[in-house]
Image (cartoon, rainbow, N blue to C red; front, side, top):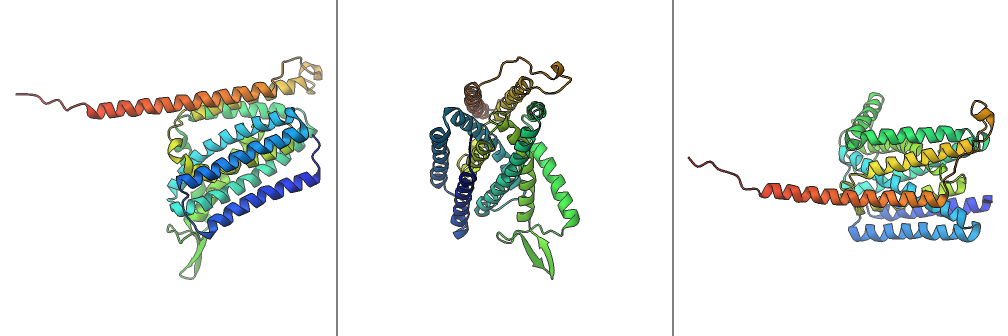
Length: 340
């Protein structure tokens, strides 16, 4: 895949322009987006992502287009799971609803920057050392196991991590527990202190690093092209702010999402290990010769990821609906009184 510096510059410029427009649009009048506004913007960003895939198809062929779509779907699913963590952070810091879009957008921009760094490092490592695929694969399997263990306890895990971050910041930086609009710091009694808004951003930024550690190895398991890795991540992050307000109530219903994501990460991890064996250069594995193992195609990967996400979503909605019906039924049971 031959991507010139000009194409890179145009792509990054367009992506940054879209983020800037989103930020300016919100900054003009801080508000919590309505359902209709969120739906329109989310649909627009998803449409942009799909159209960009067609551009990849036109310029570089069906194989790279398939890699892009598989990467976009995977990163988008991981981003939706990240929204649950953002919800916990917003709730813990009691961020005013009208300022949540700005916090989310800044957090998303930080996430894109973090992922850009990890993409550059990952691509350089892969081009230099083929055995990095072993590390990526094993790391994803380990992450999948951890995600499986946290299933149903994500809130407790995130709150513990958040408390550690806040305690560390407050140990070195004077803070106030009151919000002062959207300001990150204010002067009180002649002393500069930071507001909970900045603490929320710091927590989201640190969380973005952890998200990048999962998402970048995952997409490198679907494509080795840095351009596809970057654009799939960028388009998955675009519209995440609007999606937060669009499916805020739905997040609590996706009870099996973490299990589905753990299965996807484990699948990609195994795929990476198989690819590493296919290109093996480690002297203590098969005497440094490639191992004849099957490799998973992009089409199979896309089909597997899509199937898992559909089953996970449907199963989650069915379970929550059943639980709600059982709860309503239990509340209707009349109280039994003893007759003396």
